[in-house]
Length: 352
View 1 (cartoon, rainbow, N blue to C red):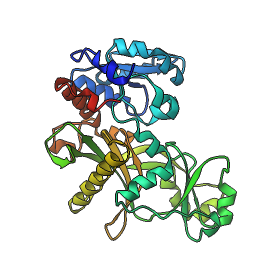
View 2 (cartoon, rainbow, N blue to C red):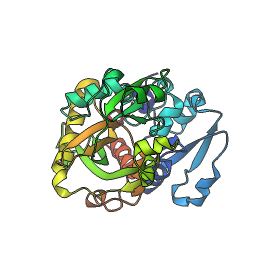
View 3 (spheres, one colour):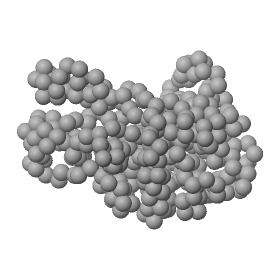
C-alpha cells in the first residue's frame, strides 16, 4: 500500500504529528498544540523525563522503541494514530537515509530531496544550477594554496570539519575512510536563513504555484572556533596543540540589514524553482547557509531541506515571523500547513 493510499484512509479531523525527541522537537510539539493537533514523541528505550519541565511542549503521548531503525517496524501504530512524521536533522541522521526513504509512514515534505541534500556533489549541482554563488571547490588537495575548509558528507552538526592551509596540513588531518569535499574558506559573516515554502498557499510572496516565507535568521555558536581566537591565530593554536573545531553548541538570533532582503527572497525563490525541476519540489521549511562578504554579496555553502535547530530561538516568533503572524514559529507553521491541507483535502500535495 502506497503513502497516498494510507493518507486516503486517515481521519482528517483527528490527525497527529510525530517526531523524534531531539533537535527541534520542543517547538514542533508546541506548534502542534497551538494548532490543536495531537502529538507523539518517538523516544528511544525510555520516555525522556525533561519534557515534564516544559508542559506546553510535552507531546500528548510517547511511543518508545528500542532503536531508531525499529521505527519502521511499527508503521501500523502510526497509521492507527493518523500520524504524520515531521523530519528534522537528528531524526534523519539517526534513522539513516535508506530507512527514512523506505519508511511506510506518511511524512511531511518531499523525501526525494534527501538524495540531493545529503550528496554534496548533487547539492552543489542544485545550488549552482539555481544561480547561487558558491565557494570554490578544490578538486585536488595538492592544489590547496590558501585556507580551505574540509567537510565530510552528511549532517553532523559541524563535527569533523577542519581548516587546512596547505597540502601537508590537509594530509595530517584528513580521514581518508570518509567522503569529503574541500571548499575555499569564506571570509565574511555567517547567516543561516530560515524559509518556508507552501505549495498550497496563494498569499504573500508568490513562487511557482505557492508562496515563500522568510521566518527567521540565526548564526551558530561553534566550538571551539568561535572562542579560540582569543588565544591567537589558528597557527598559534595548533602549535599549542589546540585544533579548531566547528561543532554547533548553540544559536544566536540575527536581523539582517533590510537592503539585503530582496536578495534573500531571490535566493529562496531560485532554490524552490530549481527543486521543482530537479526532483518535484521542496515543501515546508528549509535553510540556506550563507556568508555575506564585505561587498554585501551572499555566498551559499549549504542547504538544509527541513526544519533546522536554529529556528529553536524563535519559538515565540521572530522579527520576520511576527510580521506574518505574531508569535509564529517554524513548528507552528508546519502544523498550520498540515491543518490547512487536511481542511482543503490536499494532504497528498505536502506528504510523501
